[in-house]
Length: 363
Ligand SMILES: [Zn+2]
Image (cartoon, rainbow, N blue to C red; front, side):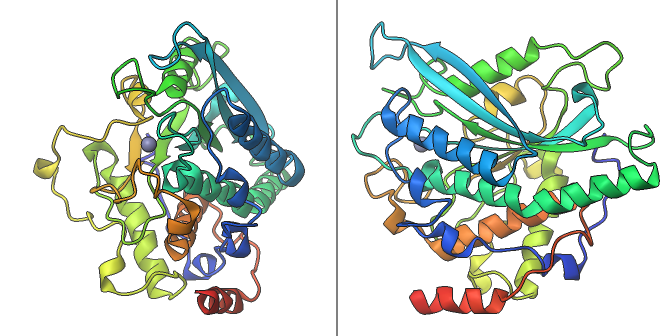
């Protein structure tokens, strides 16, 4: 349905207005990223601290975003009879006039929990950096969303029913990691519980969508991002068109010379020419699975091969490649702005060049 709708690319002028996170991605004191770079095992104080960081960020900076907690508990093979709490956090912005069941939502997801073993594991690419990227996306499109919806109200287009209502939600998921060994029951604790509970939630009769799952227009899952030179394939034929949109955004940002990673070898989304016969049934098991099993369209942004630091003690803030983190955040922001039709509404940014250059001097 969304694929069939007219889709207009962002103008160069809008692409040049996509902001970088700059110092907020500093690993020691950056406002977005640094507080996430601690162990975040479900049910531990580190996990609670990071949940508070997410909630406070939205409450203080983005008050228009609705915050939803989704709590569940489960036992794990590592912790016996103890019920471990898992808390997914959903941050959502819908058109202010729209009923919840009438909004198609671009859904951007990453997990924030970390491995139970090895002790002290940080999980910078897995997935502290992706969570910080999504916080940056939210704040970067916030003002433009307000303007777009104000203008629609002023012109009388609001709620006319002529167009699909579009919203955006960011899901920070808990309990993705296995506690002992990856299996259908020891993994994806948060996403399995969430997909199940959303499937059982009914929107009002006569809503455009029957439940919160069917209201997801596209589920974009970010994982293992932040290591240098990522190569992310297109995994699913059904969403290859969305992969191509994102890849085209990456290309255009590179040509406009606003990305921090350079050189012909540094293209992240290289798989644009894949033919229908080249898609294999294999994929990487991750938080999208409980949603995909229920018919949700998935765009999985995870590199193949996995970065070498994956699930080792070397997956730390110090081993992140910050220019790569910056570039992913810009690509995701532009993709979201394009999807939400924010062309011409993004605020002017000042001193991009100086921010970029000072980042380079620090390196
Ligand atoms: Zn992991």
